[in-house]
Image (cartoon, rainbow, N blue to C red; front, side, top):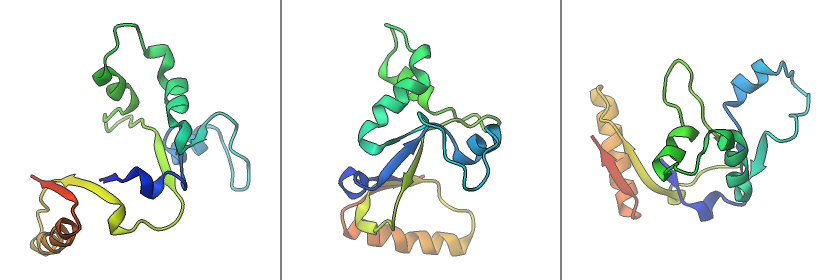
Length: 128
């Protein structure tokens, strides 16, 4: 799902990795402050990304290389930049939705209803 930037930019922050894994790795307990340098407001997400992967960039790096460095989809070691959005997400905040067709008939019926409503408000939907 891709959300419209205008719908989240003033209430979103980015975190350097999966927060649950971060908390475990750094042995942070409830109530402890998060160390500085691991999160940023939405508008500064580029600075956080550069801090995270800057050492792995070279002068020959392409845009595709940048994306691959930011998101590792290896299920054994998932790495990402996590976005936290304060407050609810309204369907009008959705710009694009993609995914695979569910196996269960009940889920297919539900998805068909969701797709119809999203298309009515101009959302691009691609289900394979």
